[in-house]
Image (cartoon, rainbow, N blue to C red; front, side):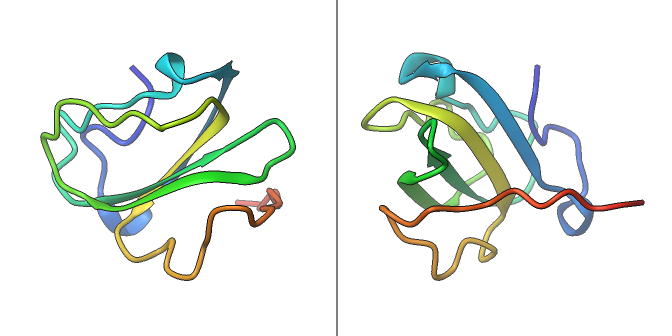
Length: 94
């Protein structure tokens, strides 16, 4: 039960770190009420796949290859992010 279920679109993004896998980085969109962009990254934080505008209540979204990180953001946020690019995570303060 990780991710953006029951959250508000303008305040929400999530980064999930899991042991590198295809199955364990699959997601569903049940109880997510707005479209998301999903970005999968490998252990080196290189983009292995991007799915844009995944619609609410989609039962299964599975990457084509293994990933270590899953980034869920509101649709449109991943514009310009391409497979093969390397992303960095920057901590923010509240």
